[in-house]
Image (cartoon, rainbow, N blue to C red; front, top):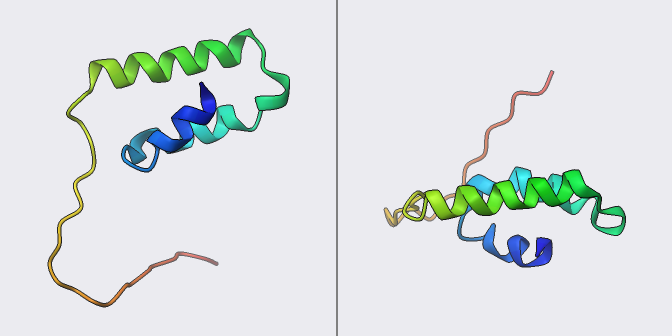
Length: 69
């Protein structure tokens, strides 16, 4: 189930952090990790239309920002 959620993070980036945390424990899953996966699935069921929309403004430049001390 966690591996399938990894593929879904491409389309729904709002679950990326939660899935990556559960993914760290793939080899030693416990009940709490299963509960976390079920919570992610419940979130996805309640929010089917909530996703980040990327618009095409015909920009060809990629800009990144960082706040590193």
